[in-house]
Image (cartoon, rainbow, N blue to C red):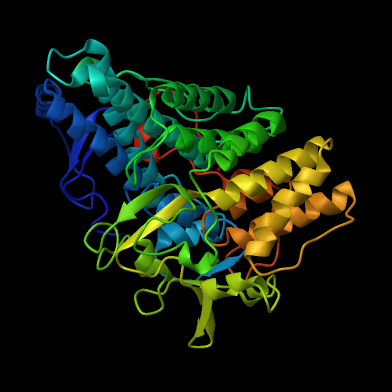
Length: 463
């Protein structure tokens, strides 16, 4: 077990109960004083500002966008090879994930901790505050909390629920908990899982409301209107709602706030670039460097070096593709340099995604394939590749899919792209050559056993 996974973390289980983990054996103590401390802190503007910063800190958690949202998706897909020793990731690489998997529990715990932080901020803003300056910033603060909650719901349902499809109104997703846990009664409420469709609808509602409240620009690592629109494009594309996916992507592209970096290898580094629509700030003491849970440690051959890039993945790139600069060979293996720096700002949504989202959506609609081709070629030209022309609709769709895989390799996209395209999915364990269907239950995270034990209303995923 990764012994630093839960030490000294105040965490809510499924219903928002606040626990303090005191050992790697998960001995738990209820700490109702935490809710009192939160309520006291949320009675001043500075306290509310600190609390909404805590919502973004929740997104950055190593169990969420800090590491595992990206890493788990790649390990469950087919383009990298997991060669590490941690049982939790090995189970993912073998598509044999158990309910007591520590990373399965870690995402759930961190996710609902983040949701509860957002709920507390939203409640505090709605309650109002008689303090100078509050009226001027209350919309921005609430919008940021709503953005974080919408992102959390969406990213979590992709792990614990089946891909969005015709059956999503009945497929089980995760739990919707939109009220804060401020006392033992609210914390011990046993809520059932909502459907995948309901979770997507909740994420969309949060992001749309956030969009209406936020400004058009924001500080690095915070959300603005275009962060919301970019995430909405991502969500709608996953739903195959191509009209909305194309529209929201276009709003980001046409905003003029973002440009593709001339050199794609410059996207990943110590500063936010003009291409980053939303990203996570890391430092060498927070998720990176010596932190055992960081992307840096897993992907860097000079650290743990648990994840290598398959040679077949490198073969997807032509020799003149500038994106080959994202990879390097060392010790007879291929690695990516996207995640190996210590102080590093990790892109979550890049402008390139908006070009390819709009390209895919327009190609699938089939009424504006010329613009779809233009969107595709914009990304290809940045990569140093020739423009494509004279493609049939199916050839265009295939080309967009291939470009999407190349563009976002090792960024946590491939699993969800393959699921959306209804393609069979291989293994990150190189000894397994079989594939599974895009909606196979082996790709799902089980509901953590610790949650099943305390909530009789939960239904487990197929094991």
